[in-house]
Length: 279
Image 1: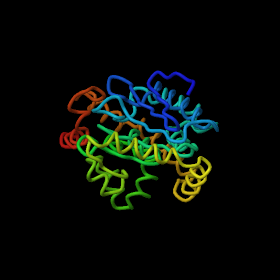
Image 2: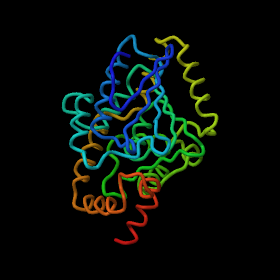
Image 3: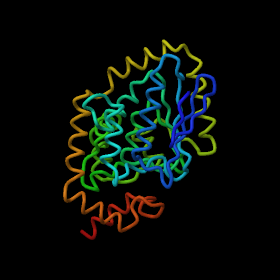
């Protein structure tokens, strides 16, 4: 890898690239993270790129808690640089992540909610710490439907009823339940997670590149949503995230410590339920 990144640290070990996100204070998905992801995906699209990429976070509490709600326009503008002409959305950028020739593995510790969960869903495989991982789609509880892939991916992975449960409750799911539902590939004991993912990455990285690319492309052709569906989800999110109801609920969350390292972010599913109780 030749590029340098503001919120990403990369390390190449043979055919496997490790990419660690570090965007203090709590790894929100903002303009800087999106800009770095656009650059990394460009590099990973090259013929000489790594065969396997392992994504993780330097923050043990937060992989990606969600987008930065104070910079929606800015991160959307950065996403447009990677999603393609006319595709100013995280959903289309994450679709590009799903389609790069490299095999992408997500190693989850801490919280991945909203677009953080959708980033993981765009990766090819997801492995989570049994003790620390938390996933959630809090968007409906805030006032808008998910807009960057959760509706498409969760419906395919979980089935209709469980996808509705995940999206409509805006609740937090621990790793064991997420594994049982199919949100992640496996929940692994935290002490074993690094070695497990490293071994899997090395195994896949040792296989012929052309076979990996062809097999991934064939599975993508069956499983990825149509571009029009991704665009429709993004448009609806962009519309409702600006609504009065969303603005009011977001303001109430900020009063409780939203987007800071505290109880509201650590237990966002509970905080959303409490917000309903006082409405």
